[in-house]
Image (cartoon, rainbow, N blue to C red):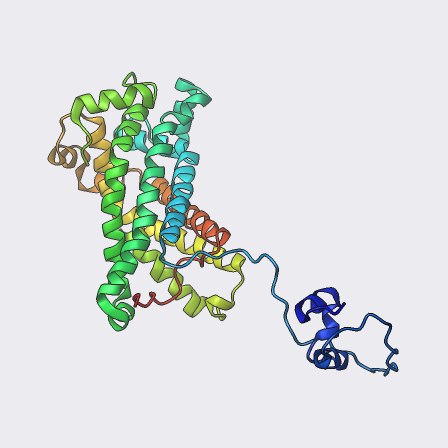
Length: 349
């Protein structure tokens, strides 16, 4: 019984029906495959056999996520949750010392003495006070920050058009990150306030379960862009000046290394620029009913800009580098390109 062309090719080794093979050309011209044995063709010695010049598609190639689709934004949101929630929870001891140095500098004079005081007064368990509101708050912030940043970056690029989007890409990064940060901080604020009070006010609460109701009863869920815009610019400059290979030709490992390095440098800029606001947040969340003027008077201008800054530079630099590394690693895992180093996407037609 004769077999169809597709059936015959599935039963015969692929090199036999390769267009570059003489046997393949013979079989391709044959209308059917006879059931009887065919005479063997005389063997022709080949001094240097070369592999067939064709490609067989993998039977189950992983499905890639379409850029700027709902699945794309969902993946970015999930990556943001992992990058922010886990990293901030991991540095809870550093954050605990930083907050106490900002609120009570007379007792917590340095990083080393701060750890020593915490260990003496609260034990090892005290180093992770407030880890639950930290995990939940920064997971919510990361979801909104990264998810909405990707959305607004594409949205503003479409409004500006391809030419203006390429010309004013830094402004688009700033606008996209500012829009995303506004939403992210609304999500973070209640948990951040509970975290600061749990960490700096002895007796306020043991953790989230009893601290959050107290916070809501006291003052309600009232209300931090440099990180994203500087990251995009730093990564672009690294691919342009420091790495001689175009991004699309670099290995994924190298791209993730660039993401971490760019994130760390961006985190240092972010720490310096946002430090006065961070001091204000810590002071206002700790001192009930205090105003910005009270904080400025108590801390002084120099204190606003410098109190706890070295520790915060180390913490925010490491955090931001780790966040971009984890975020881009997750994007690579689900089949998306890493962030930065490429021109903004053309608007959808």
